Length: 103
Image (cartoon, rainbow, N blue to C red; front, side, top):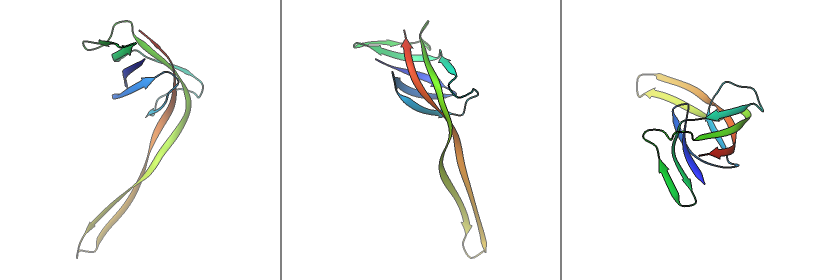
């Protein structure tokens, strides 16, 4: 059983007991979260497609932690002009454990 869910504008294919890294969300660690924007669900070979969402379907999960992603280096240079600029960025994510998929 799996489902395709819209979480903060990003689509994820999720299964039960899976951990995902979603864009940072509000909420405390060990708080329960519920996603009701289910676009597609598969259960024992039966695929249900929403138009655009499935009615009554929801995915529940638990916030495990708030983490930062890998560092991305942004380096800009113009040759022979003496222009160099170095910048770094670390995206913030929320680690979520998918507990249940209800169709």
